[in-house]
Image: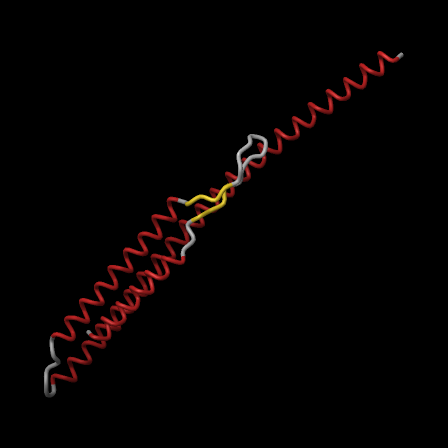
Length: 160
């Protein structure tokens, strides 16, 4: 139980530290034709994910602290029961470590999959915005070229 408490407490602290390192901002490209400046904004989905990881780390740390308190407040039995008490504590700690590691890994895999979907969506949106901007810039350039050609034709015709 002592080992399980320490492991849970350390895993909880690791989750809290990890949540603090997550970058929740993303770059939003502007549109020069519309006069929209590029900016960096916080993504609400990433903020929520960071909050969930932080809260899970706090809960894991609290569970580890409760395990440690229970283990240190209850003395180990004496005699031949001491060995089985230690063995059961080690087995319980091992099971909890495997469950916590598996759960945390599955949680991170789920976040990664969700973020991959979000990145694909953002890339598709940016591709559409760029295509629209390119189309409007090309149409503006074509319109100017036609106007210049008409102006050159009119000035060439008037000079004759």
